[in-house]
Image (cartoon, rainbow, N blue to C red):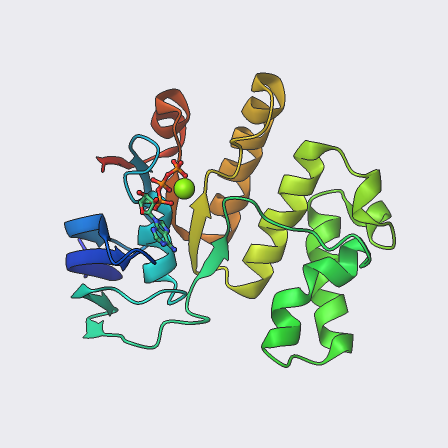
Length: 211
Ligand SMILES: Nc1ncnc2c1ncn2[C@@H]1O[C@H](COP(=O)(O)OP(=O)(O)OP(=O)(O)O)[C@@H](O)[C@H]1O
Ligand SMILES: [Mg+2]
C-alpha cells in the first residue's frame, strides 16, 4: 500500500466561550487517509465532526496535535483541500457559472480560463444549460450538485464533504449518492465524508470511522 496522504495525530480542540468556560470539541483524534480512499466519519451531533474539517482545511487552528500531508507536517493548509461546508451557499446574485468559479477567483485564475473549466465540468454532468441561470431556478438536489462541482473545481485531489446530502429527501439523496460515486471515480479523488446516515456511509466508503 502507498504512503498515507493525510496523517492526523493527537488532534484536540478546546473552544473558549465568552463566559470563560471551555468546550472540548475534539480530543486526541488520530487518522490516516490513503490516496484515493473514501473515508466516512460518523458520530452524533456535536461530537466535533465539523470542527475536525475546519481544522483540516485550515479554517480554524487546533489546540494540540499535528496534521501531515504527503509525509510532512503542514501548518498552512488553506487551498490544499476542496471543502464543501455543511450548509454550502450559492450566491443568489451570481449565475451558476459565476458561482462555480468562486474558488478559482480566490486563486486568481483568469476569468477566461475559469469559465472554460466551469463549462466543461457542467457539460460533463449535463448541467450546462444552467450556466447563465441563477441558483433560484435549481432544485435542492441540483444546488448540492453545483456546490459539489464548485468544490471540485477548487481542488479535485482531496475533498472534505460535510453532510452534503443531509437536507435532501431520500430519493434525491440516493440518486446523488450514485452520482457522487461516478464523479469521484472520474477524478480519482481522496475523500473524507461526514454523514449521519450509516447506510450512506456503507454504500460510499472504503472505511468508516466513528467519532
Ligand atoms: N466557534 C465555536 N465556539 C464555541 N464552541 C464551538 C464552536 N464551534 C463548535 N463548537 C462546539 O464544539 C462542539 C462540536 O461542534 P461541531 O460543529 O464540530 O459538531 P458536529 O459533530 O459537526 O455536529 P452536527 O452533526 O450537529 O453538525 C459542539 O459542542 C459545539 O457547540
Ligand atoms: Mg457539523
